[in-house]
Length: 245
Image 1 (spheres, helix red, strand yellow):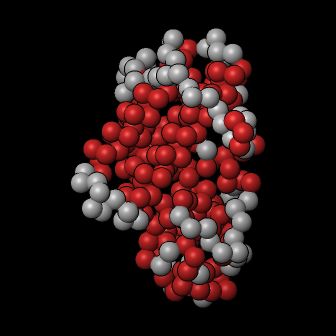
Image 2 (spheres, rainbow, N blue to C red; image 1 turned 45 degrees about the horizontal axis):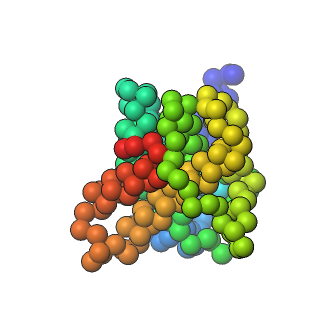
């Protein structure tokens, strides 16, 4: 690449970063639904028409923010898991990941609102947001799979139940959690893997429900110490999965 092209590329990267940073700040002050390219343009001292050369629409900007935020959250979860020296201690890995997820969300309430808050009217996230969105649950599933490969097993289940007691089907976007690679070291039968998948997804959704209650003020008056409450919930979820914490 020529020096001139390199300079142009670096300038574009710098301006793109400024736009994203401004938009992320706006998520905190205005909320995702009120995000506008015109306001972001004012923040970075550009005319709105110039911003469209970097993000052709508000939806394109929202998609970029979703992917970046999901990836940051996923990286925080992955780093927390990797930092646990004793890889055989599934409980410690589990607790470290849940703590790291909560810490990132508390530090980034605007981004959390975009990821897990009220959907933005008129916006539909494209499929390229799916892989970043499931990084956290992938980490959780890997921890559970490692624990089961070492002999751990969940507590007895009351039995899967949709209407009439029918097994609950996992949505296609999460079907990868049942992939053999995550459970390759175990001797679980297919129905046991399906149960492990259900419990892992339950834990994942419980985690973000708990964080949502905290960040949107619903724990006020009922939970005195959100950090201690997170630890308590994390340990109970781990116990349900049979991995300890």
